[in-house]
Length: 128
Image (cartoon, rainbow, N blue to C red; front, side, top):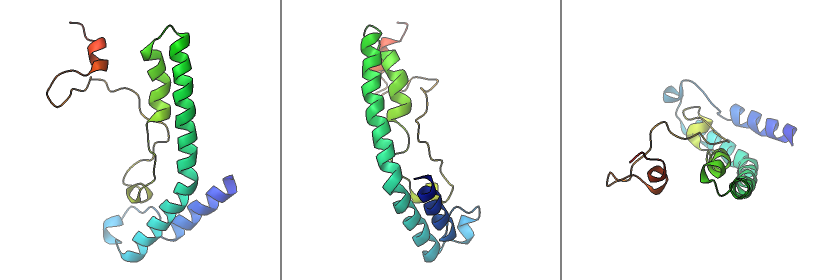
């Protein structure tokens, strides 16, 4: 499996993989190489991400149950496993965007809905 992934990555780089001067070399051949590389990598990447997310959701649910219904404890498992990059795109192949198999942690500031009201999760932790 590792050899196959290494071979696919090598083919993607040879066909037009990540380059620091993307703006100067943007042509159809390079873009086709990136598209072929991304599609090939996604054949392996997407199933691995889906298995990780599915298992993470199940384990997070169990963590929540075994901690007395703590949503925060469940989120500690759900956030890294169920978020992140699900598909590798051309921008990621070109090195313009990062690939994050495991999602990021909570934001430092609570987000607000379009109306400016705090969401259900934020409301549970507000000091009002």
